[in-house]
Amino acid sequence: MATRTLTMIKPDAVENQNAGKIIAHLEGEGFAIVAARKLRLTTDQARTFYAVHKERPFYNDLVAYMTSGPIWAMLLERDDAVPHLRRTMGATNPADADEGTIRAQFGESIERNAIHGSDSDENAANEGAFFFSASELLIV
Ligand code: UDP
Ligand code: MG
Image (cartoon, helix red, strand yellow):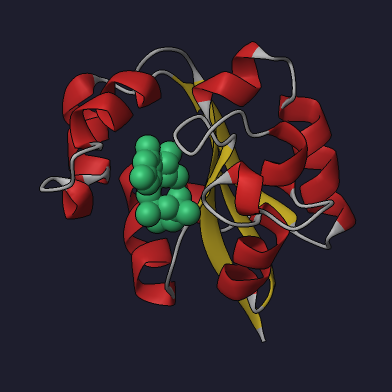
């Protein structure tokens, strides 16, 4: 069944001019781009987006990195979107990511790992609403 997931092309990948290659990879996997926007997260936005990690030792560094430059936020659609995007991204640490995955190709470190993907359908809905209004989510 076609479902949706939220991705971010993270500041390292935008800075390294890899956004277009990552979008091409996602389209090659059959994802349709429902909505997309380039923006720079504020510190408050990044803290809120990653609030689930607020007790983790990497939280402050993660917020600093995610606000260090522009990102692309995109709402994607295809069959089994959440698990398929997670497989397409590869492991959080690019050193552990399977060959050919986005993080293996474009990630620099466990922090600067090129791309975000929602980890559940519920979080995909919440993260989609974080970036896009309801009217922006109607076009496929
Ligand atoms: N992260 C980090 N150090 C860690 C684990 C995660 O800097 O030890 C960063 C990394 O950018 C990661 C993000 O925090 O993508 C969110 O972590 P999560 O465990 O949710 O990984 P993901 O779902 O992105 O694979
Ligand atoms: Mg996660």
